[in-house]
Length: 190
Image 1 (tube, rainbow, N blue to C red):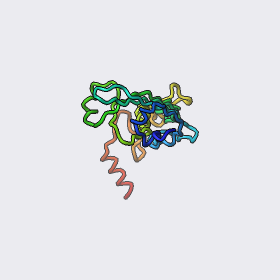
Image 2: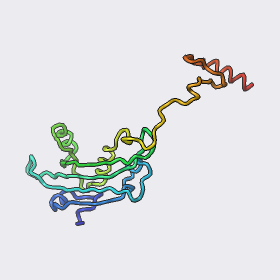
Image 3: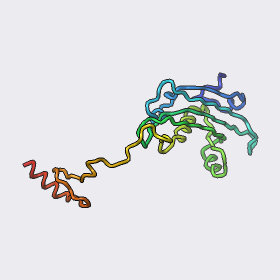
Image 4: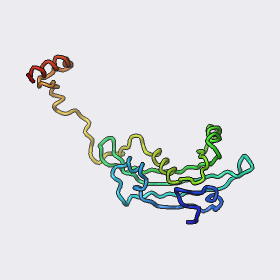
């Protein structure tokens, strides 16, 4: 790895001029925000990623810096159907173009197919990678088919009829009067 390639303090211009890809495998546990979303990350779970930057002719006199980021990992999440662990594949394959200021990024954002990033003296590539992985998380993680069938029925107690707080059965279709329940509880405590 050259002097330009510390992934949390990357000089993007030097990285693009050099034209050499960064290819790494790191433990998923190193991604703290992603680890908070996961269901017990094992130390052997790894994230494979590659970053490549290049210079392209720009609209102005200077060349534009472009970054291509590719990553893949399998993250254990909680299945929202059976509450077991589901290995969820995550993938990133994204191009970014760097611009000088936030104002330029805002002005060009609607017309750009690529994502725009503001140039920083020391760019944190791993933070960008973690942001992309977090955005790739499914809203509702689930197994295609759960290994244990989820319980989708009402328990027997509910079928037999509801009981109020003092143990009296509530006839089906009627709701208890909360003040009557409160009065009964008050009488019991005296």
